[in-house]
Length: 418
Ligand SMILES: Cc1ncc(COP(=O)(O)O)c(C=O)c1O
Image 1 (cartoon, helix red, strand yellow):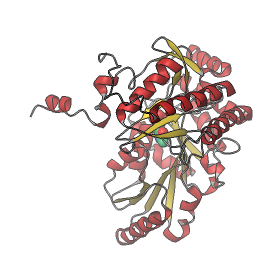
Image 2 (tube, helix red, strand yellow):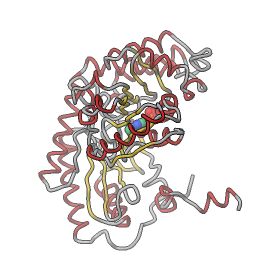
Image 3 (cartoon, helix red, strand yellow):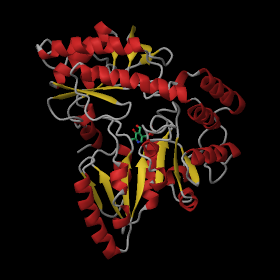
Image 4 (cartoon, protein in one colour):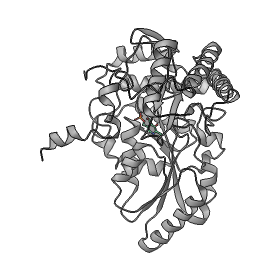
């Protein structure tokens, strides 16, 4: 069979509705400056889809730092990988600041969170080692595990009974092979907003002798009294062996970092293929990230604003009978009952007639018959945005319940591909 023919006929789970939803449900263009309100297909909408938690994307001091970084250095500098010719004092300084913020000895910059995590996992393990990980782990963790030649044991999401069982299996195996055990969890689970049970996991540490790696993509900057993350929130910063954060969410930038003991970070810098064989993070990203970190450290009011909106949105939804699952973070899922056709019509109604833009998650990401709308409150949303959104949700839920959206299959609302 021709490879191209096969690829075209097998659309993959995310490509299932590509023809109906391109440019609408998939690859929508949000235009105008990043804000609580943006333009979608010519109409202004309140946007609840951006991980711009602290509102830093368009913060004047951030914009100024980004502009100056680009003017001073351009995107080219430094050329080459860190190891060869891409090292700068600025990269090292940002790493020192990140390590200090996370109370770790050292940190290492990553060009992207996704690739960085894949490579961290690859660098830490050999075929004798065993990984124990959560069933709802992000793709970057799962893809890192694809490179792992040894065993991996998965436990159902946050199920500590099963977690211990899997640890037992891992210990039995590593006792035979002489390998070690790596446990991986997320701090905040980005789809449904619930937290990894870091405390619960760590309670088994003495008995099973493992190392804990926490992917805190959504927790860095948002969780904990000082924004240091889910480990600060759960008061276990000193017990997390390796902390991973991305700049793509609360930092509203690009890039990521990993923080741990100095000797471990040193070892990673000589092993991580995502960094050794890739160009160094451009200077505007580095100086821009430093400004963002400074704001996270010195402007607690940004986090307070975020949490005021989070609490208003989540309590308002709950008081009005919406199921928002077990979120304990800003990520706010709203679970409704309905099929894919109803979900798409409902979201279309929200976008076209009510000026509300939120992300929609459907089967196969959630079970059949479940619609998950996912809202990301930020520091730049207003109490009026929250009130309007809850009122609109009440309205569309009513329409969903009485069957107004069950008029057929998935409507054609998208564009031709490109
Ligand atoms: C849990 C988690 N880990 C890692 C990543 C990847 O981060 P980046 O966007 O920096 O590649 C994401 C972002 O989607 C995430 O949600």
